[in-house]
Image: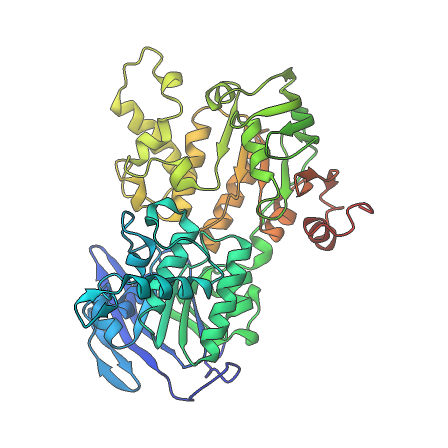
Length: 512
């Protein structure tokens, strides 16, 4: 991919606004960035992409003043500047939103947005009315309409993301850095965010958008820079490079290699659902999953997919219907009951529902199987460590030791720890809810490879995914959910992209 200036962007000037030259950064035992060059122009969205550990978030934090670089220089309008703290970056007009929010949960929304920058009357008394009015205006530009007098802790992660962005916009930045801003947002919220980004671009603000989601960066980006192993791999116009080329530059493999499947005839039924209705969720659902196959459920967020699989796992109230599991009728009453029957759930929100982030890798691996491995309730840490080390080796979990707190692992490795937890229970039916959400392209291939290996060993997999290529590439059979209703079952050959996408949007359901 050739280097390029952003001629395709909506430009205010042809001179770079912010430049990084020869940036180097080391952490103990890790060289995070090595002689990295980067620039962003007024009125463009410059995508920064790479695998987990490639250095993209580190570079973003250096430009935001959260980290100090070891060598190299940063230039603003061609003049060298020194940024040692986030407050100094803001003085230069450089603001950003980190992956980890910098918010105070017990303060109200407006107080968070104007923290340490409160509008004052006569320079002394905080003008609360103006603060709330401005907060509502900033949030309104993102199509968020909430009570700004309420403590922030009363709102969910997506709202907090919008509050974080509003806090940055309150400082009127010239350069806006967004690190994985869509990770916790619904599709509608992403649309609102992108609308606002386009407005800011038209105002001449330079935007650095850090992500690994190919579909999103294609929609919003003007230029793209790829980092690989802490080094510049390529820079060029977004329209000049295909997704396949981007993947090859990032991880050294093509998109066609992202969905490794060795398909074979499936075995006997593992799960049959008939006429299942869930309170507040899907209605009259029929579903079959066989041993040795991956069954995908596609559909938009809010269509009822998660409510269906969590009800099967024993969470939620089943109003009617039958569930047959490995030939026996079962009424799911609790996750513990379903775990004993050989079912495991890899949840969408692995950090909140799949892992105990402050615990070690070892304890996260064995927490669901303590009774199986220690029936007399005498726990041996050496055995816990051996069990965990077995899965670390088999699943190639990147961790210095099994005693490492799981919160320090990459998203892909955390997902593998969740998978190890359920494999350690001898689960025969695994439910994957968004198996590769929030992990980079390379880790996705590893998760997909593991899933294929599992079905080769007669494990049945029920997979929810909002990623249509993932559903089509990995599934042996596909269902589509729309407004709580499940389509008929389509074979891998029948489930074309046009057919599934149309059903997801409610188009042509009667004909299908």
